[in-house]
Amino acid sequence: MSTRINALFLAAFTVLVVIAMSMFTVDQRQFAIVFQLGEVKRVIEQPGLYFKIPMIQNVRFLDNRILPLDSNELERFITSEKKNLLVDSYVKWRIVDPKLYYISLGGDEARARTRLNQTINAGLREEIGRRTVHEVISGERDKIMVAVSERADVDARRIGVQIVDVRLKRLELASEVSEAVYRRMEAERKRVANELRSQGFAESEQIRADADRQREIIVANAYRDAQKVKGEGDAKATSIYGQAFSDSPEFYTFYRSLEAYRGSFKSKNDVLVLEPGSDFFKYMKGSGRGNDKGK
Image (cartoon, rainbow, N blue to C red; front, side):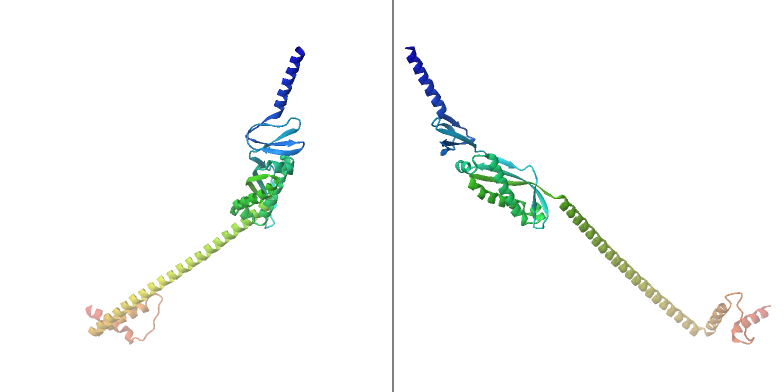
């Protein structure tokens, strides 16, 4: 009786072990590949409880989440200007065909990362190689990421992988390129400064010439007005003199004699030799006689 009970207990235990070995669960973050004697029999993509044939079938789990591929080192690429550019990229990828992924790479994630890294670098090398430094850094960065992502996705599909996104985290010029760019910027700044100085000097000369021209015009106008006023004064004086001469010729003759006396005896050193009977002493003689009579 005890032997029979032991046999039943052993059979029940064996059944439980077989059932336990036949059961497996698939997490929602995983794919499951069921192998039978090394051959892929089925791929399980939905989470749940599943069964397999013990000792004959085995299960391999793969991650179905979006995985990162972050290059820790800056990769060197050459632009169309033959200048070195250091690029740090970031890739998001996921397994979309577990069977093809396993057949292509043996389910090895390290091999998948190496393959994807090579594909991304090849795409970046081609896209950056056809653009200038300015286009890569500022102008067409988004276009480069889209083009590399699309091209890498086509290649990745051949190994059961999807490229979700490609990003360029950091773009840096190599040290020698940075120095060359700095020197070119410095030369450009100097050229602009010299050009501005030249323009300023030309404008200052133009302003100075215009000021001189206006000064000459003002002086000329003032001289013209002065000569006009002087001429008008001389004309008026001549008119007055003429009128005075017409009204009193004797007074006009006397006035002209006074002007002659004044002009002849401006200095004490002036000497004038004349005959006593000269008309120059006409009024002096008359003045002297008048004084003598008064006495």
